[in-house]
Amino acid sequence: MRFVRRLHERFESLVHELAKFGSIGAIAFVLDTGLLNLFNLGMGWGPLTSKVLATTISTTFAYLGNRFWTFRHREQSGLGREYFLFFLLNGIALLFGMLTIGFTTYTLGLEDSLSFNIANIVGVGLGTLFRFWSYKKWVFLEATEPIPVELPDAGVKQDR
Image (cartoon, rainbow, N blue to C red; front, side):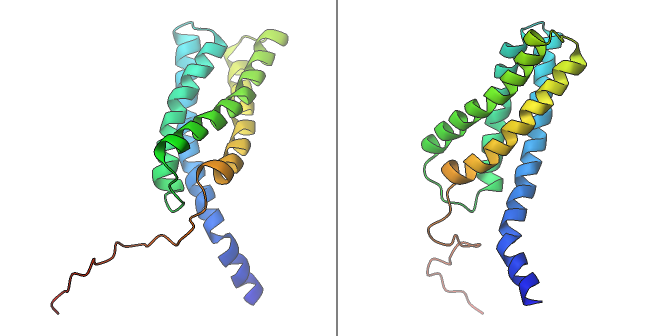
């Protein structure tokens, strides 16, 4: 029984982070895919241009959700630093999507919407694995001190 308790304690925060990360990621995915299809299929912009624009918008949403919800308990090392690293790492992850869409469209010659969306899903999946690992390692750092659940009373005495 101690083993199960230690295992639960060890992975509890990881499971919560993964659930929150997955929730933000799911919303960002819907946003990214919807905008990607709107830009490419609806507006007739190129597949790679559409991917870059859709990813830029969904990445901004994902940053805000991850900073202020998923990883809010982690060290805050400065909005500018985090935002820069977040977008840099998302730029690297974007390459997965661009490679799969580019390969499908230009190498295989598959330009139908189903192939386009499947390529996007594969690229997003590969990029998501990279993003989760890299955010924890470089963007949203472990807190050096425990972050209090509630704000301290600041020396205010309460009458009881």
